[in-house]
Length: 376
Image (tube, rainbow, N blue to C red; front, top):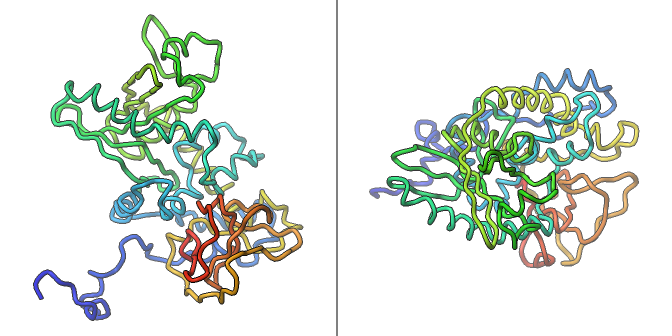
């Protein structure tokens, strides 16, 4: 059968490597999921343990390519969400760099370890108009470059520093400038303003400013940190930073800033081992050790070897998490609240999830099993 891969070959030693899923890591990382009796350890002991498992985020070149390819669609992709959670992403790098490793901000820890899918109102406006802004970018730049191609992309993990990830809004290539990334911002607050009007306002939080008649991205702004992270994670030669409103569109070409980046990368890697891993292993920061009553979620587990799936009997479509003292549930490690859904795998360690955290609007059909985004 020319061009057809016979299923039986996948179990034969001489052929099985051809059928192995390249996204699966070469070793199991179960210690991350259950803590292995570390829930009562003090922080120094826990951090020492985490140094020994610091390679949990490692990916090969092939795995990195597969993660990016399989996460096109970004926040609509379950794998993207699982790969993102636990890593220091471009959008969280600024707050990670600002926090104190010894006494880290809980909001920063939750942002890294338990990100939520649901955007706020302002972010929703930007997402809604992202494609329009991308089209405006292409129309404004295509005649200035040779063979320009703009493509959406997935989640990037760089094997050289896999603790960090980035998901720019697009990748651009042309024969004259090479490969670049694109980051689009559509500020809802200034949707009816020109960029110069926004710059001339008293809003210190606006990302742009005017200097000598030229518009620049503020280097102390979180978006500059985001862009620099995207540049180095994607190994791009430049980032075109696009600010789009209903009345204006400004494109700024940002070059890699290696000194700036090196300082952020070092802090991110330190944060990953000393803060993120202790949280992921036993929820050290979000739940005091004395009150931990349930195993913490492993938000990186989709990149581990698959667990055995045992379907949970389903009696009713409506679901409510059972009461449990000091219990936390879901990817966000939050309490029982609002509408929740149970993973139909009886071996799922988290078990119950908030609708909004897993992108659900309606209760899943009782006739179709529902499994969590981690594919546990």
